[in-house]
Image (spheres, rainbow, N blue to C red):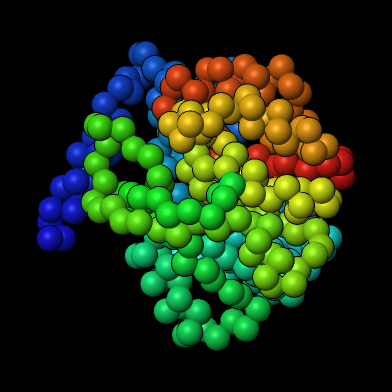
Length: 276
C-alpha cells in the first residue's frame, strides 16, 4: 500500500514538473510567491521547487499571525490541516478555534492535541460554508495537502466521503463569541463560500490571512472577481504578505488570468479593513 501511494505521488510530481524547461517556462504552471510575481508572470524553477518542498511559506504565515496576534484574542484556523500552524502560534492567543474536515488530518490533529494538552485549542471535524449541509469531500494523494469538495477528471484523489458543513457565524454564536477575530484560511477554493457564512463576523474589524487560488474558486462554482467584490463590500482591502496594497485593477487581472490557469496560486494574501 505504501509503495502504491509513493508511486502515485511520484507520478503527480512528474506531471507537475514536466512542463518546465530552462529555455521556456509555461506561465500557467507557475507557483509564485506573491501578487506582483503573478501579475508579472515571472518565476523560476528553483522558486517553484523551493516553495513546494520547504517550510518557508509556513514560516512566513506564522510570523504574520504572530504579528497580528497583539490585536486579537481569538484565532480561527479554517482548514487547519494537521495543526502545524496552530501549534506554532497558539501561545499568542487566548483561544484557537480550528476546523478540519479531512478525517486523516483531524485524527492526527486530535491525537497531538491530547498529547500536548493545549487547553486553548479547540478542533472541529467539519467544514465551513454559506449554509448547513453535507457534501462529498475528496482526499488528495499528497496527504494533508489539497483536500477539497471539487476535483477534475484527471486528478488523483485517494478517497471521498461525506462531510458536514456549518457556517462560521452559527459556530461562533454557539460558542458565545461576539468579537473580532484573526482568521487563517486555507480551504482550496471554498473561500467565497466560507466568507458568505461569516456575514456577521465580517462586520467587525477582522484580519484574514488566506491563500488565493482563482482556478479552484471557479472549480467550486465561485467567481474570483465576485469574491473580491464581496470582501470589498464589507470594507476589506487586499495586501501582499509584505504589506503592499493590491489595487482593484491588479486583483481583476489576477482573477481573469488565474481562473483559467490551474497553477497560478497565491499561497498568502492579507485581507483587512485598514492599513497598519
